[in-house]
Length: 189
Image (cartoon, rainbow, N blue to C red; front, side, top):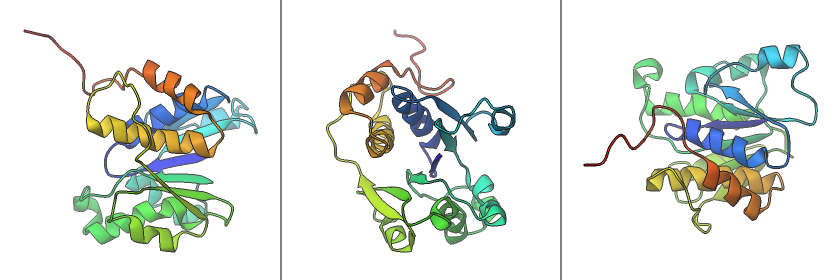
């Protein structure tokens, strides 16, 4: 199970990661990005060798202590003030986000952006391995913006960790058209 959270970029990163992982393994995308995968698990649609990619919001992660489980691969895109109407403070918001790795085992992995000083201290709290991402060769993308390049780097970090080659990641990301209702060309004048 791969879990992705952050203040912004988690939906696109999750979709990009699923596209990369689908080049080599049967992959399921769900969570906050669209639908629960629990019915797929219950009816046997998700097999033991499949990869599940979950976008996890702070609201969902607040409940993680109830089950005491975190994904074996956890990635945090960033942390900026968001949903403070619910969480009250940035510290409380961050505490909810930390549940993505709080219950990991020593063999599990937490992926953090190398250039994010706000998240750097989280590495010291991780019970599993910590890997930093970012700074790799840029990808040719159909989706515009430097933020999507950061999303692609994050998705690639997951793919690399799970044994996907750069060439397969490049093909998957070059074909990625973005998510509906995100940056899209409407017209040219």
